[in-house]
Length: 210
Image 1 (cartoon, rainbow, N blue to C red):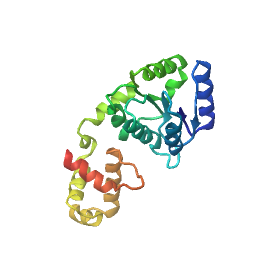
Image 2: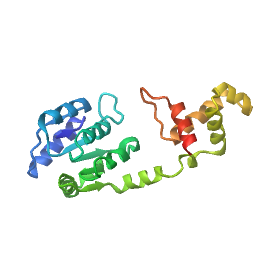
Image 3: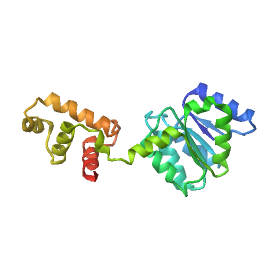
Image 4: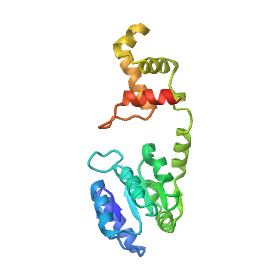
């Protein structure tokens, strides 16, 4: 089962997998179609992109996590142009940690390595790109380490329930300066704008956990 929103890459992967003796039972272009197709086809392994419609955020990775929750033994190989840490650790921890992989897309260019990784995951192995490992290990450190002293000060005041205006008054700076600090905090804490989440609350939670 293949999920990839880029038609060119999707068709290329279908051709590649077929050439190496694999049967692609379905090739879809978005996360909802992936979930529906898996339920209908019961594939031996799922290969999915991370960023797909409808939101082009982390829909493919989120779908992979949901699939592993429903079927902990379903092998899943995730391909991505970058490391999406939000669900990566959850995916790699799913089931008993076997039959799962996370590769960056430049590995697909190394055909033999990609096919070998696919077979290993299908056989119950675990394959993780070294860059993914580095990113996840970095996440285990104090997330506030990357903040400047001023950004920590601003975050502490946010945790007290202060508005940007109130923080600006407290620190005797402009509200625009506080807005810039808040934006930097969101970036450094890996809190991109997504529908249904409140980044200010998530930043406070990160502060309290640290």
